[in-house]
Every structure is written in C-alpha cells, then in structure tokens.
Image (cartoon, rainbow, N blue to C red; front, side, top):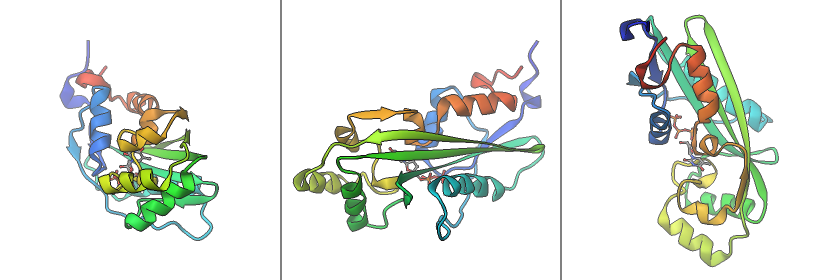
Length: 200
Ligand SMILES: Cc1cn([C@H]2C[C@H](O)[C@@H](COP(=O)(O)OP(=O)(O)OP(=O)(O)O)O2)c(=O)[nH]c1=O
C-alpha cells in the first residue's frame, strides 16, 4: 500500500526559472509551491566556478522559509571558461563578449542542485562540456538581435537559438538547461518524492 498523499513531503521549488519547472514536469514532478529566492549572485574574489555555483544553490535553499513537511529544491547554473565565471550578461555588449570568448572552443556548464529538508541538506554538482563552433561577426549580430541571451548564464540557451552553434556536448543536456534530471530525480526519490505523486 502507498502512503496517502497528505503524508508525502511537499516539494517547494525555490526558483523563478520557468525552465526548471518545465524540466521537473518532464519527469512527472509537480511542485506543491514555487518560492523564488532572491539572493546576491556576485561571485567572491578568487572564488572558483565550482565553489561559486555550489554556494549559490545552497544560499537559495537557505533563504527559503519552510513549514514542517516541506522540502526545498534549488539550483544554480553557470558557465565557466577556465577559472572565469560567466553569469547572466548585464547587456548586449557583455553577451557579445561572452559569445566571442566561447566561439570555436569548449567550455564547462556547471549546475549545482540543493535539496533542503528538516534533517539536512543534500547537494549535487553536475559538469557538462559544451563545444561551440566558430561564430563569425554577422552570425553573432543576428544571434544577439534575437535577444535569447537575456537571463541566461553565459548569454545563451542550448534549448534556444544558440543550438545552431553547438555541435557537441559531453554530459547532461538537462543540466545545461538548468536542472540535471537524472540526479535530481534520485535526490527527490531519496527524500520520498516520486513522479505522479506516487509516494511509497
Ligand atoms: C547555459 C544555459 C543556461 N540557461 C539558463 C538556466 C538558468 O535559468 C539560467 C541561469 O541562472 P540561474 O541563476 O541558475 O537561475 P535563474 O536566475 O534563471 O532562476 P532561479 O535562481 O530563480 O532558480 O540560465 C538556459 O536556459 N540554457 C542554457 O543553455
């Protein structure tokens, strides 16, 4: 027999990202509530991309107020070119700079996931290699005109127009979009949260 749904942990998605909600829906998980956490996303001096992205996911989780029986899921995605962290571009000029930096080479997309429950925090860091083909000046201008760079780490979305520049990735596609689905499903299952509300 399965436990009644009123005994199930209630999942709070600590995110304003429509992509994270869609990704969860893809694996049959519907959060009980959305509670975006507003934190300062400025990297610390000399902070590595891995340390930064982990800290962001943890701080988003810590910023949420939870009621008994609630479990919070948060994530952070960032692009790393060597030790340089490419966050969301402030404007078109910065998006252009980021794209030029990634053009014709490989970079790493890091996504950290945090799951906060009453008995503690579990975390995962997923690293995906992404190759961009060389992007010439005209193609870059056309890409920037679309505006797809806004609100995206590194100034691109693999699920959007920038896919035309990406011949190859090694790792997790869903992690690049914003939430590594296999790892997230395992973390949720360990907390008693399963697809379709089927809580065992
Ligand atoms: C690299 C890449 C990033 N992104 C997005 C995912 C994230 O939404 C965003 C990185 O910013 P994040 O700070 O990780 O997330 P967010 O501010 O959008 O949402 P929240 O903090 O409330 O959860 O970039 C893509 O959609 N596709 C991509 O290929």
